[in-house]
Image (cartoon, rainbow, N blue to C red; front, side, top):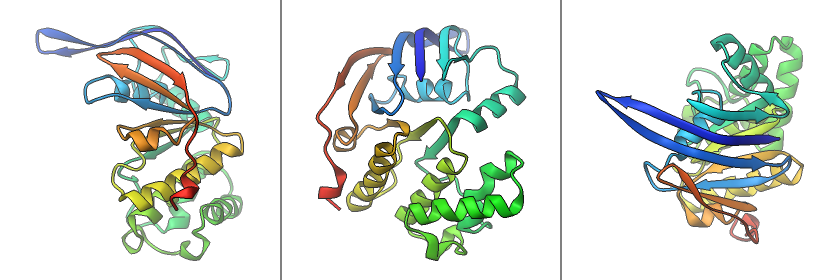
Length: 233
């Protein structure tokens, strides 16, 4: 599903260069739920941006679902993001003046799905995350946990190959975090491939594998006994 070979990434800092990723080798099979951990500056956000086609590597190979991701134009990158990827952000990134239903339907609008079909699909995914009764509510009328559920429904609406979650519980209290992870685990149980960037140990242990980054290299990559979030909900 995802294969990274000898990935390097540096950023110019004035006259100096900061080498952020130093030869990353990394593979994710279809249906995995992987936590990517590391302290600030470890390279995890840079890796996620490259996986999400929001940034490019300096060298190395990135293959997604058999497709080499290399030298993409902005248009092509956007097309591939819509086709392959769903994003879940710490800050939800909902559009304040659009209802929950309209927010979920947005990726389908960009895919030129007809209006009736995208509304039906958006409602299906809102129902799946338990928010059908809130379909007409604006983000300002929702709790933090509800906003993240809307964001998860939006990420799933286009039925992507991979969900990329960047600190999905970072802005939530513990109880709500576990509710969100319970939902993420259930989505994964259905066969969806999910990568979760987190700095929280308890959240990482709700995944099936933990990849530790430090100073731009992978220092540990291990499968773990998954903790089910439902026992805390």
